[in-house]
Amino acid sequence: MHSATHQAIAAVWRIDAARIVAVVARMVRDVGVAEELAQDALVAALEHWPRDGIPDRPGAWLMTTAKNRALDHLRLAKLRGAKLEELGLDLEAQEALVVPDFVDALDAARQDDIGDDLLRLIFTACHPLLSMEARVALTLKLLGGLTTHEIARAYLVPEPTIAQRIVRAKRTLSESKVPYEVPRGAELQQRLASVLEVVYLVFNEGYTATAGNDWMRPELAQEALRLGRMLAGIAAREPEVHGLLALLELQASRMNARTDAEGRPILLADQDRGRWDPLLIRRGLAALEKAHSLGGERGVYALQAAIAACHARSRSSAETDWKAIAALYATLAEVAPSPVIELNRAVAVAMAEGPAAALVIVDRLRTQASLRRYQWLPSVRGDLLEKLGRRDEARAEFLAAAALAGNEREREFLRQRADALSL
Image (spheres, rainbow, N blue to C red):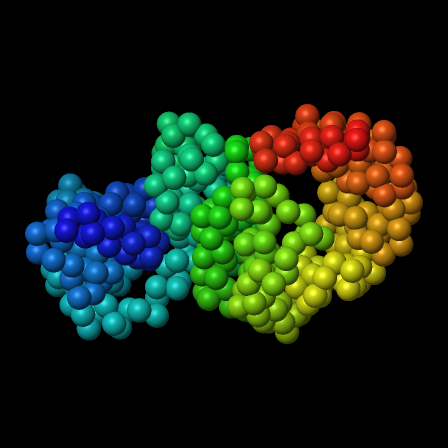
């Protein structure tokens, strides 16, 4: 019985943790303290629910308990001589100090602020003051509801390392007195780019793991998708938010078809498109249309989503509009120049114009220092050489790619391609 209750608590926590931390952070103006108080509410649930039963509104129970813990914290601060004005509390906290308990009517009246609270929390967790590794860890902890152990396992990093990153990140935010607010004007765009980049990186790590024994980490991709949907709900007028969501939905639609029964990679051209998720495709196309309607056609994520949409609309690789994809990559290269984007353009050019035209592009990229340890460069070159009948050269490229690969599944796949050319 208790195990079932604990599972229910874990499920509710995963869903509501971000909202709870966000609301409490608005009251106490400190993300680290807010998380501790929210954790206190979780501990209270673990103590009371197995004995008293699961409440009718478990999320509201956790929220009210966390708010009450916040009030206790504020009362203690007041007793220590702090003034309310110095704490920068908003109206809710001031009213709550007069009325000890939050009643349902007050909760209902403040529901419209929850989206703002979540947005503040996302912008705080992804503050450029923090390293990218710290932003990712803190975002997954506060907004993804993942435990330190789960984050460490997902990124194949020792748990103490993740714990230290999170502790240092919260300390940095507190000591630097980072405002708990959504920035405005030019700073908003700068910070929004940081937020979107974190979600994008989390998804990519789940979609194609950089290391370990598994080709994908679906749980990590799902967390990023959930964060993307959350952002689209609370920053609905920002086109690149919808562009990113479109990209994530469309990419996620393929996940069931990306590996075989043994977990081995299946390349896009060989995937059974009947296994692509039609609901996620519809959601992705709708998000892309929203991004375009807001004037975001040339956004970095919207352009990538448009490329994914070309694949999603095609019944097979042969029927794909590769010329359109190559053109979209060319536009993307103008908006955000990158050797990786140029390498992806080469793949599309190979399909649209033939491997010889693509090889010219790839050979130019071999001088790029940033791609020196990038396994997909020799992998793509090997594929092009194989299509041109230059088997020995292709085999050498696949072996070189395998030596650079950090993911065991990827390494095995590349070695198999090399071995097939030696027959």
